[in-house]
Image 1 (tube, rainbow, N blue to C red):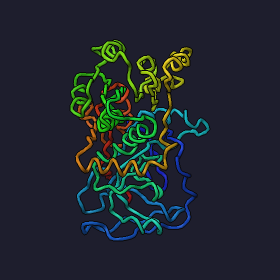
Image 2: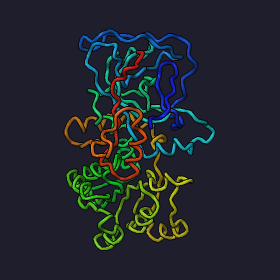
Image 3: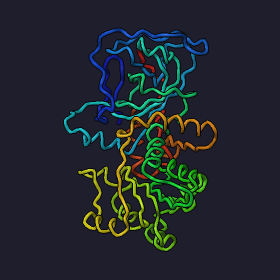
Image 4: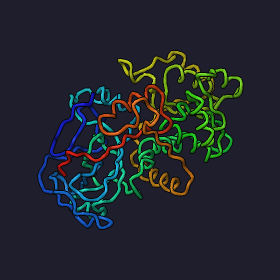
Length: 382
């Protein structure tokens, strides 16, 4: 069944909860935004202007109105494991449904505030990390928009998943040549980047995954020891093959996997918690861990466990994104995208497929970042 759609000032938004905004929400509608600058490539004029209460904001189109004569191109929004947390209201219980969901997208600018026109132009491809991104049209402040060379889903993989891996490992990982790094859910949206960045630092990388196909993918991006936990016991592999322990763990699964990772830490080892996806579908959003013995285990090894939440590192975000874009452009980084081509119902196309894409993730089917394509809408009014 297709989700309910709310129509608000010409924007089509899914009617379920979203993350608390990292940036202040826009003020009520006031001044008019006028489309500014020529479209690239001799394209038709911009659509009619929308109104919005700030001159430094942009409207990004993640669909193309059929009234225009140029060929329609797809736009993309990203699916993250925490989408289910935000939609459950765990991050801000005071917010009542319906409110917007989604963290990130890649689209095309269709309108500009006056001050935004100094840095952007209509028709420009832009990546953005902003609340309410599961939408055909999104208004975001210019300061969070990042120009990208084109409308490719690979750029979308870097916004949340790539920068989370880059910043957390740089700030908390203490990576250096020869260190042993364990990445859980290594073939997922952010795990793929943790594997590659650790290899760039000349580390030995172990990656957990759920299938032979994912093991093959991990080998292709440099993982030294993929561990398919459906055919091998992760704890046994770590004890037998890494008796001295691992120096760094990039952990996103939680529950029993977290406990195994703690037990596998080397002396002065570091465990970085970037999520605990195994518990997100439970009533509390948590998976039980052996917390009672944790202090003793950490003390015995002078080890540490530290959390990482991207919103607390926003000053480092733009630099991280720029660096990752350069790595991708130079062929130094694989940005694996999963658009659901192997799912039972086919590719994730249209906002109505977001629910199916989230389910696909929780069935552990995806390899790389899950991306939903938003095709042109025959009902577009812009």
